[in-house]
Amino acid sequence: MSIQLSIRGMAKRYKTGEGVSDINLDVRKGELITLLGPSGCGKTTVLRSIGGFLKPDAGDILIEDRSVIALPPEKRPTSMVFQSYNLWPHMSVYDNLAFGLQIRKKPKAEIRESIADVLRLVRLPGAEKKSPAQLSGGQQQRVALARSLLLKPAVLLLDEPFSALDAKLRHEMREELREIQSQTGLTMVFVTHDQEEALSLSDRIVVMNHGRIEQIAAPQNIYNEPESLYVAQFIGKMNFLEGVVEADVIRVGELAVPNAKRLAGPAAVVAVRPEDVNLDSGIKEGLPGAVKQIMVLGHYAEVSVNLGKHGIIRSFQSKDAAQALSLGQHVRVSFAKVTSFPKE
Amino acid sequence: MLWYFRGIGKRKIVEFVLLAAFILFFAGPLLNLVVLAFSGQWAYPDLLPNQWSLRWWRFVFQQDDVVQSIGLSFLIASIVTVLSIVICIPAAYAFARLRFPFKRMFLFSFLLTHAFPKMGLYVSIAVLFYKLGLMDTLLGVILIHMINVLMFMTWIPTASFRSVHAAQEESARDVGASPFRVFRSITLPMAMPGILVASIFTFLNSLDEAQGTFLVGMPNYKTMPIIMYSIITDFPSSAGAVFSIILTAPTILLLLLSQRFVSADVMSSGFQVK
Image (cartoon, rainbow over the protein chains, first blue to last red):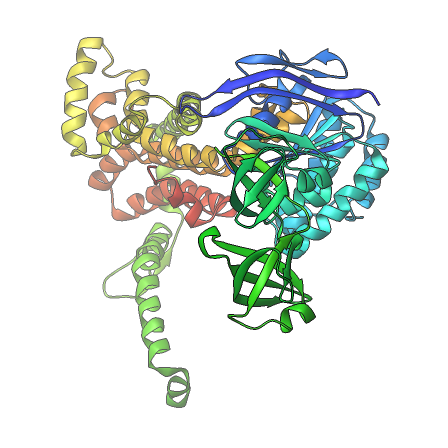
């Protein structure tokens, strides 16, 4: 598929010392890509640079193979949905939506028709005459989204558009956005600090940290094969154990795990997802430990096991398996799947 | 009668009495003014005039300098309002949007003209105006009126511009509006209530100004408040009452108008120096 948006060697430094550097990213046509990272990691800087609200110090941004770096926001084929204060309160919903089309000198009848269509698409049919103050937070964001959709941008930019909404509504809006994307086939760049949002929404995730890209991959790959210790820490829950490299294996106490990445050592960090931690009481293999805490979280339970000098490890168990355990009980811990990283 | 008051409670009665005193205090003099303006003969101790008449209205409007002063006052107030909009609105936008050194100090300095006794300020300005040849000129009078309104005209619109969020301006750029179009279609209309209130304040303040005008504008620029002094001293109080109403009417009208556009808390937010 063709490349819709291409960022090449982008860098931007602020007076505070923060900023982004070495940003290289290709977004395919019709793809929904998420920039994910903690606040201050530079994800909004990248988004605002694509939209033309920031001028990068270096690098180039191409949309449909044309450089847009010299263009002001109003000349770029992008459209942005902001976190809040998207709408103009002195105008009706209709006028808010029509503003961009009027600037483009579209005929009145066409404007009216496309506004009715787009309002149906964002599930606000007939809201034309309302004023933004009469709408709830979620409805306001829908109108803002509709306004961007109307302009049929080459790339739609979304700057944490649902972060001001409550959890339930956020969930609904995610599903709706995904549906709208599949209907319209728009290329979207979505910024969020919420990993659940990124995992559920994206075709690919760009994990950012301290102004740099840590990993670009599909959600499942980010989760299963984090490329760096940072990504492993940031996405999902993860246990970290210190190990010693011995040629083909990494040894964690009595347990040996394969040294798949051929780390040089001598020390390494072994990372295990809680769902990959097995607890057995009948066997002799594995790390010895004692059950420290059992928390039942609905259909599953989180069991903490004290491994002595290796610290505390968390394991997800089924509710039944957890009920068979008791506090202080001795168990053997083994791993179904591990990832390893060089010790920093 | 008593059962009614017992039913509504002590607190309500106190509130009622306070409200009544308040209304009497504010509306009483105005009411008296209106009665006085339409009275032909009114002897003490009667509650109402024994004779109603429009005599003093006719008298006041037959004085040439009175009619002239009304025209002059409205002319000056209009010029002052337009000029201070031209000067202060861009300044207010800069205060709200741009970052520059000593911004707070500059914004606060507008309070200076209100920090001293007015007469002292006017006399020192008059000395300056003598040297510049601005005494007894229209420009001199307009300048002295503008000194009084700089504070309102900058502070209130500054707060209004601040209430327009960056994202609201940016999303307008985003859908294709040029910076000028954003200002015209988004920023200015959103700040308009504040600008309107400040303009009304300015207009009324200029209409009302007497001290500075007296010092700088005499003898050729006699505005309504100046004429008022001579009418009060030279003619019966009924003539003064008629003139007061002419002077008060635009104030009340414009204030009612401004109330339609903005609430009191929006007005007061103009006085927050952030």
